[in-house]
Length: 195
Image 1: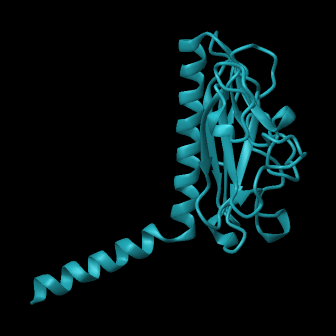
Image 2: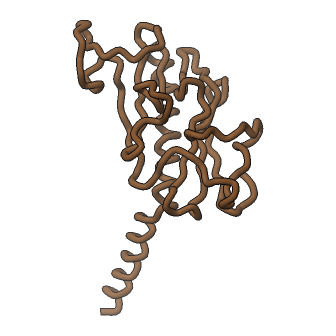
Image 3: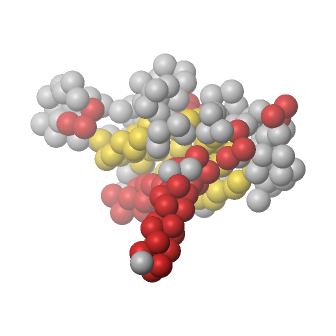
């Protein structure tokens, strides 16, 4: 009976941790980092640019304010535009039917693009070494997308993740530098420094 009680107690703590805002935020950052590394490898393998696009519809903000997501796609014709066409060149209405589409990744419930505000204990600037300014939409990449080249290099920038309903979860940043290295950083609310 004692063993069953102990197992139930451990399971309860584990379940609570897996559903916590800090766990969801950390998991979203790890998934994004892995997807960016995968995009870089795919660009080299397929010898074409691959994008991790935070604003596929080019409306000027990160996609999906309720169900935030980002899209990974290959630029097979090198024009820098996501084509809504299948392999035969026919127009399609569903982006997943496009021959350039790779995948779409939704962020966990409650996680969104952005940072904990400086007045609430969040960062005043982005991670080192460049310490960039913080973008209002949570994306510092030009055109709101990271581009990986067939040589393995990339555009430089950051994508910031926060949990607006629980500011104590902190701010995560995932980014790339111009040689294609994917890196991440975390700023604990009231923590005083990126790590």
